[in-house]
Length: 80
Image 1 (cartoon, one colour):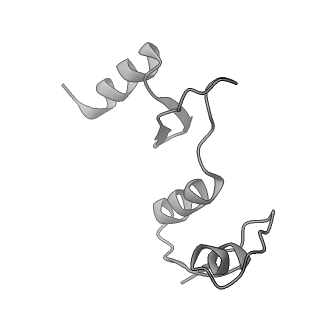
Image 2 (tube, one colour; image 1 turned 90 degrees about the vertical axis):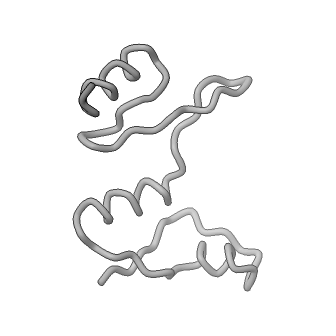
């Protein structure tokens, strides 16, 4: 069975959701309903599909590495 047909079947069954062409995610169910994907992971995936290589940058990356406790509400990415 081709991969495209498998993704189509899983989308119809509700196992995965399609965000855009070539980008799918599996929603996690919680008390409030199905969750959306992590915005940072989504940006990284779109950049990867476009051939860019994302580098660690921005306040969110400093927080991830434990250098600060501040959290930014914007996503910052530097690409090569």
